[in-house]
Amino acid sequence: MNSLDTLLTRILADPLAEAMASSPALAYVGSDLPTELLMVPGRYACHLPWDAARPTPLADQWLESSFAPWTRSVLEFWAEGRFDFLDTVIFSRGDDSVQRLYYYICELQRRGLIAGPTPLIFDVARADRASSVRHTIAAVKRLAERLQISELDLQVGIERANRRRRLYADIEAARGSPGCRYERIARASLFADIDDHVREAALGAPGPERRVLLAGSTPPDDRLHIAIEATGWLVAGEWYDRALARFGSENSIAIDDPAVAIGTHAHRQALGARSFSDRAIALVNSAHNARADAVVLWLIEEDEALPWSIPRQRSALAAAGIPVLVAARRRWDASDGIAAEIARFLTTRDFQ
Image (cartoon, rainbow, N blue to C red; front, side, top):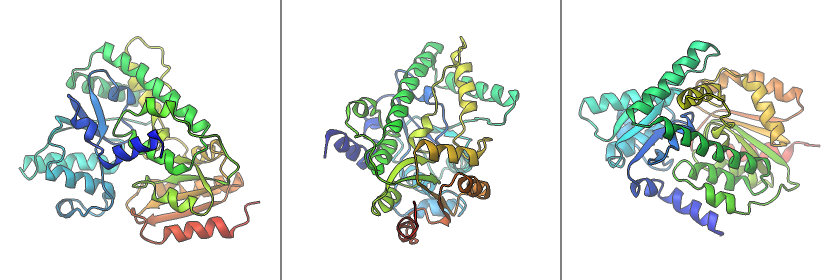
């Protein structure tokens, strides 16, 4: 195991370690919060962690079955006091489960059933109209004011975020190591700044392996990557909310006001479930970018938004000549036989 893999293992074993050692630290929930806001100087920011294997008896009392399963783990940790060292947690309104979790936590705190940090909401808007851009810019300014982030800090945040975007775009373009490694990089980067370690690591060059794009709902960890790569195929890319693609393109908006630049850029990002982009075209483009020979489109039972795009995505992939396994209404923990279905799909078809 090399130094990067050792680091990833340490971070994923204790995702809050660096945040607890940093002061001040804030946390966030959701994949479409502006990276620039999370990288301003003087603050440490990390995503709240989850644990797919841990029972959630407290959260199960409060959350209905329609919540994404990982939110139960987050609420369980919250109720147990694991996040009490934090002052603030920012939630995104761009994801239905995330915004509902925010309101449930607010109500549970109001009723004295849980304690913990102060929850805030970032109200990103995605409709393709000027009012949505203005709304998102206003949300950036409100959050910056609440967190006492200056214009200079926002500008530094833009510069730091752009460096991170360039780094991960270059890594994605040249990826050749097993997909499990990239999944671990993407997940660990939610909890710690690993940019310098990734930049210095030798990740390998693209190989001749047959290549798969893993798309749809965000899996809890690398278990789907393991299932795919056990067949001899390579996960050559991911297209879901918490993948490295979440950092998006560089913020090159030439506007003097950094809050306006951040809000305008955040409005344009198109990965989240509430995006108004054409998800069929985006999926085919992602498959082409990954040079994928096949796509595994995996969607959990609780994901109510993404399945609406399946018919057009299936047709678009067929037109592009890319075979797809559509696995909808699946269990989040992959305990429903999906590994065997993936193996049959990848080993019994003729992918000439």
